[in-house]
Image (cartoon, rainbow, N blue to C red; front, side, top):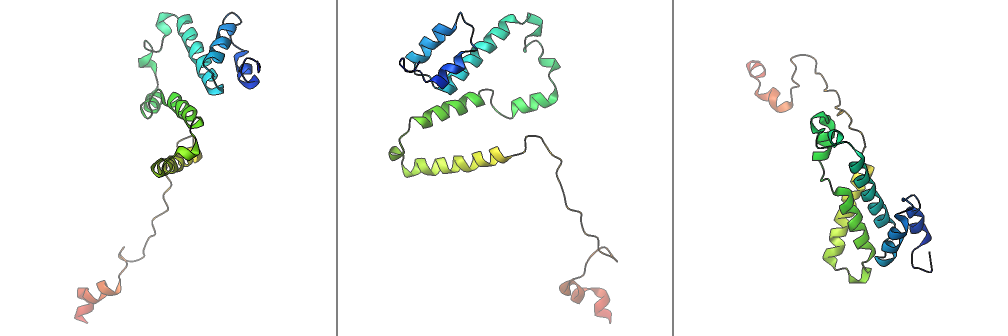
Length: 159
């Protein structure tokens, strides 16, 4: 594979492909200089097309839309359906960039993106109930008097 300009690690990803289609995939990968992400994208795309073709019409996702749970609908609505593909495309784009070609605006935008990605990467994967600290209770009238309110209080002025 190395002599034909396809890294072994990339070629290994093509091994699970259907033996009938594997040679054509290898040729495309060499011709278009696919990296590992692109090979995974192509295999996933082929797999999803095959699974759609193998499903009976009544079991296709569009027909089962009413059966979809509310949580899945909310999750799908919170991010675009092509989100993963956009991330992978951006990753491939960044691999082609030379650092000396970046402007200060590019670097600033990348730093902002990096900060947002750190937050997303560290975020909880399951929703948690919000935690609120208990509200302190004050003995007596329910209000704590301050010096200002004590000086203007009608009870204090009568004394």
